[in-house]
Image (cartoon, rainbow, N blue to C red; front, side):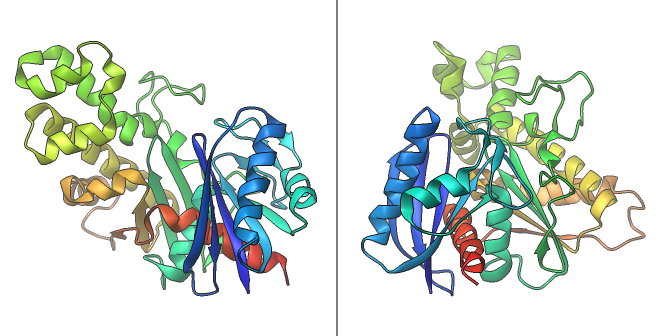
Length: 314
């Protein structure tokens, strides 16, 4: 059975035809439009594009937002136009296929469970470090969504009271200190204090600090830039700090780090592990969670959504 997984992002939409082994056989892409009707038409179009080339049985959508417990509706998606929308029903009407909806981190975690780095352990926390932090919890191989379908929002644990403002409305959230956005923000702050230490990064922020992205900061750190290296060290500190909180609450056997920032893991993961081990409650007297990087890359949400869609056909 072939199904379609669709990663509906704030910038682009990617659909993939996926087989039972998690292999992506074909893809289609489009830019994400504004407005509900245009968004739904575009999602249906990319599904239809790949469905025209393959015999598919269902479709799954993965997105960053609050999904209803029945995986049919979207309560809120900060980077999309859906608000309390019956998304599965609308896309099903447009495509003629059964449709399910899932949070993108949940979909990615499910894909890593069956086809990647999360196979085996009974308790797994998945963290997607990108613009922010997406997160998922697997208990005995099953996704835990909470009573209302929105758990776990680990990126919005408050780690610095009164800290950096977050788009969620709070201040000091973990993702404001441990994400691609956070890496860039930290670098800009450090550069403002000592601009002479990094002529390379200073050129990026001369006209617009927004030109200094997390990706550029990581690249500069790989080249040994002192400001970028200091920003990466801060990210490692906050990753270890947050992981200790996560371990205190969930006591996972495994933590899988995915998302775009995970591609730079050699720069920070060893230091993060060390800090996690040092500040964990009961440090030195309890087992530590293993920490691994994800294996499926940017295909994880597509593969996971397609797997969920397969279940909708039964």
